[in-house]
Image (tube, rainbow over all chains, first blue to last red):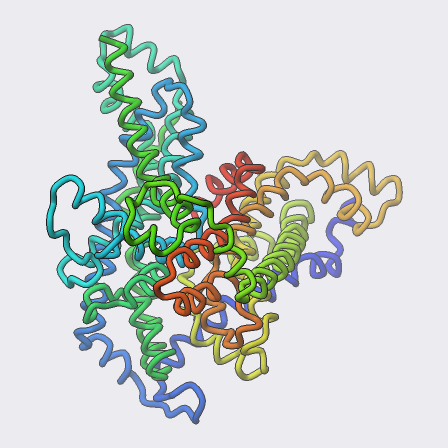
Length: 292
Length: 273
């Protein structure tokens, strides 16, 4: 038995395909990103070693910091929207009939590609006959803005489809966590005379604290990596008002052919993502894990 | 009093449901309208006649190629991902070796990587081995990047398999391959189907890899293809609507049939983000 289950050749045979793919296509490229960042390189010609110049330029680059600022704004919006999702889940989990169907309806946008979502919302926001402005005009707002063309509004306008896309995902997670709370604890609180509001605030929320902190990490890290929807909806415009870190990196490399500088920005994106993940995880991990 | 309370709660949930579904209903309605109806009529009015010819027009306009590419690339990548992930999960959970903990940790680190940070080196690697504008590059990239999450979903199930099965099979003289392919793999069907559905959603919707590595129209998948396509039909909203509906339909259908698997997979993949 042990001989068969610890045969080195067989272990290698079963592990290597996955191991090689992950090493070659995920880990080696990450190391190379850091390395290319040290080069002056257009992606095709010869590489020229220039030391830390790209990284120093990146740190001084106002466009990079404005894109990072937009990424952080999205992260803040996304984190705040978790409260809304949590509220919906609390309602949904309070023995409501049809909650199964509702959860599935909420989840549908999450299944669609960001490109389709972007194209759909470009139409929703269309100033002349998009759904949003038609509704606004009907309820008496005469001159609704051109949502995606106003630098001061565009980021909020982009955030609505993000809110829309991920609602079902977070509601699903919160709902599962709330349903895991033993019924007896809720019953006991009810007998003690607690109101529904008190039960939610004092019992349910503390009990799903861990899940909430995981979703905070997801929302923040997900926002820092955000790309597809913005790239298709606005291309970072108007005038850079919706540029985020990933779209800035993408443009540097695949529109300006500045692969060295693009790599440096890509590496900074990686480092910022890792640092933020570690910080949020440290802040949100409770010292005393909850046991029912 | 209690009734009124529940009524208010239902109204809240209904508003959220409307917000989630309304843009899609609007999309479907305008995909069946003529431009005249779209630009002059009320946005939520039903079309005077259902113009299915919008769908025929975009399908004949070439969207079929993108659709077919999406199907085979998604399918092949799913097969490779689930096979390789199952093999690795088997070796990591059922076989005995010293480095298994380390290798498992490595796979799980793969969950946290922002793909954009790896994009430039991937591009130059594929360029140097002539895989740019070759759909094979997409298949292996999808396979690699979905391996960590697929393994994570599989692992829990593999840990719970009873040891007695392996013992019995080996005492009966089964080889390790027979044990894996004939006994273990069929036992994991429920969790495998969850990973298949999750991989399908990821691969079908993927954008940035195809947009970066593929330039020929004949190799593009739907997500990237519909971009150019919509460009052609700049002002023909009916055609644009039909294109978008065609691109999301397979996923919606899969969701209708396998919604429990989708829900399971999405909950399990919460860590991926």
